[in-house]
Amino acid sequence: LKLFYHVANIGDARSLAIHPASTTHQQLSSAEQLAAGVTPGYVRLSVGIEHPDDILADLTQALAQAEASGSGRKAA
Image (cartoon, helix red, strand yellow):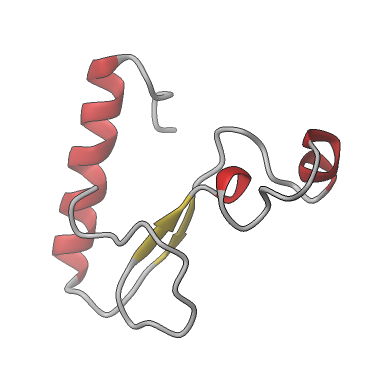
């Protein structure tokens, strides 16, 4: 992702992508994370005020890059 910020910054108007298992829920055990609905591959997106076309383009290129590198799952 190039447009999305990667830090938990509540109240910001910019788009945000975070990995809860390693940020907001890192203090929980794996079992507690799963009970809270946080899985290892879960990424939380908060869409900001950027132009929708820019957001979609950024997500599209990031998913394509992840799929090409073999590090991501295919989008549904």
